Length: 289
Length: 319
Image (cartoon, rainbow over all chains, first blue to last red; front, top):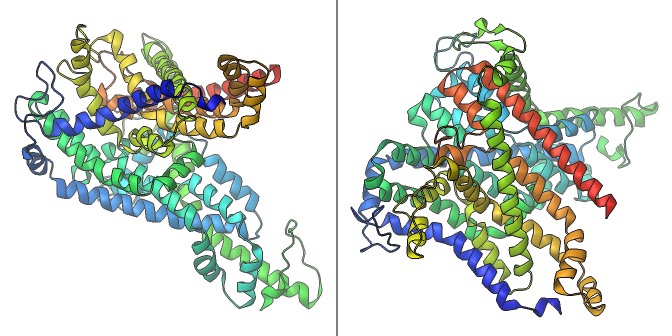
């Protein structure tokens, strides 16, 4: 009854909101095609005079895109793989193995989710810089650049995720013990049970966790900014585009920045559109966004 | 083969195993499972030790020390001086930085909550719900660098926002350059970016309210407004609480968007606590007060979260 009332008003509200959500993206795309003197001038025009690709060529040239892309891809892949591996291993142990200290470890995992990330920004960076015997450091972490010489610096703080462990553990709890026990009776070791039986059945939650991790890692900005101030070779896509914006005349190069942004947003957007059901379920579960 | 003897019953605390050959095998199996479990947990535990506990202790030490950087041996513990320095001697930390932080979080929650309640109740009656959800979700998967720069550009004199104002016959607004409008302008962007997840949670909450409640109320002669106020809102409280707490938490901590859009300017108009911490540490090398600022913000986050839970629980008892 109430569902049928005033649908046109509901449509008006929802469509207006959707337009407000999408228009900034369209403005980004349109600006990325605008020619010299077209962007940032009065009066404002939404559409470019012609869809020229010159800004994309300029972005390719000025941004050193191959390096940025490589860094982003490597870091995102390593983080995603590591989170999936460590979460499913730890999650399996906490859900299906019996051992002294299990409750304590589980509580520890839960408590790691309580600390906000900004609390670790300074000490983690200092720990990386003073990493013993890396990047010219001595045994006491003095004298060199530490781990910031390596691309590992970008990935290290995100390699394990307490929420990921919690998520896989909760899901694995529902797997029937009988199947695991039967495999053990057949002589399968715990590693085989985990790899052959548990992992295939945990696939849905691993896809969700993998997507969440992938998108977060690809979009991460603050840590990558920090690391790349220590070592400019480690710039990722977001950092590189932001640097371009900061260092050049904004009126003239805004279209180039927008072209860079379109290129850096596109991979994640495509992935999201293809697998959005899994992603949305993840946001639902985490509530962290 | 010994695993045959391990029954799938809830295990008690590890104590002496029962005597006899069966007990012996059971104990061996149990030892092996313990070893395997800690092997599986090792990467995570090692990570938590090195990148969670160690940094936490290090940050605590720095927050009560003077340190100029470089030599770890030169950290000089001075007690609570750093915390004192944050709040005395013309320090900007309490006003405007912490007040900005609260206003930023409060403004974001208010905007996102209002917007998401309105949109979610409307979406609930429509077709193509998947399409709407996808559209509203786009900002969430977009990097903050893109969101911040696109909006910063839209706020420019020749940008889209002023273009719309001019087309409506209104004067241009210096959104990010004017200290009075800068904070509301970034609040609007943060709310815009977080609307999708709030709508998602509220839509799920609305779906869990049985339609019969609405029908019964309508039969009793309640208008749509009354139904919304007396049935929908109270039953939606868990979802509202969830959105409120998570968005407030995010709002108190986030500074990436502000870093991209204004870097805290003009002046300190959009400076927030996490950004102040970042700048004190990485721009000025003032590691001590930066770490102290981090813990003050952490305390604020804890207090605000507990207060929200308490308020909602009390409101629940009164209802």
